[in-house]
Image 1 (cartoon, rainbow, N blue to C red):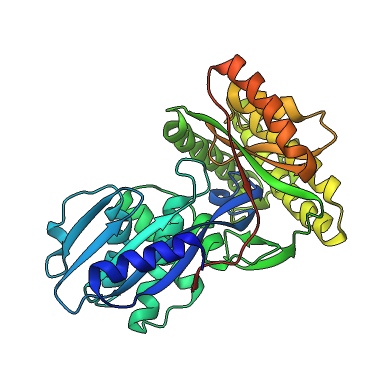
Image 2: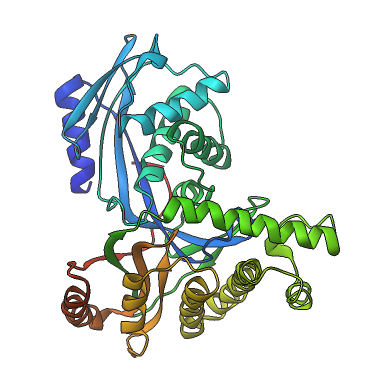
Length: 386
């Protein structure tokens, strides 16, 4: 047992005088394939060793008590009248999942739970999806509802979309639930077909550098990008093939043949999405062949596309990528997530990480006035009962 598992177990026993089921559900990183999810393309995430831990059991009453160790709070929940529960930051993530089971006609008995985690909040590693996936997995298991992992991922995504109000794609939950140690998941966001590809990093490691900024552009610009991509797709359906299912499957030649006909901004958005989808496919070939250096170059090419074509980067992210571009110990670097802040994801030689971080921290703080945080992660298995 690791420390977090021990802690949630002990707090549960102390409070409820019974043994809990313990579920671990990981945060995720996305190696390559950004803003392709809502365009029906591929993504390439991996589950990490940073995770949410949930101790849970039936309460045998009509009320349940939920305890968040990280928030140092607890809430009492009346399962006879869930709709009367007040809006509450972390408890909403649990309540939204319960609601989705009930919408499917699966009555969830009252339960007690204790949660804690080490997924850094706001880092872009999807701490919320890790918690929601743990809750969905546990409720399904405890009550014998019989949903498979793909169905749980869809349920959890709907909880985030409908109850929390975040119009996210399915990648975060899917990666959390389906993760496999030493592998990435190539997920087709249109069909939800997926396959694993080996991630043999050798003497390199996945390192995230956290800018410490979250510009308030994220939501408005995200929605604008979606609209621009929809405009592009409508153009190709009208002039080329009305059965093309999504922007990711538009051939590059169609785009190139339309340059003078399309709004230049829409052209660039489409160019990024189509090229990124192709990059993912060739990056998977690199992984299968053990060409880690080529894979890293494609990661950095993704950042250039996000910076110059999709325009969702920011000065802090660009500074971090530009600062390591020439480093021999760094195979690849790019912004990860929606953009305008958050983390860069990097493949760095293990014995160079500490020295590089020290140097980068000084330069970054001088440039921005912000202390640079670093998270080093390894791949891990998906949601599981411990």
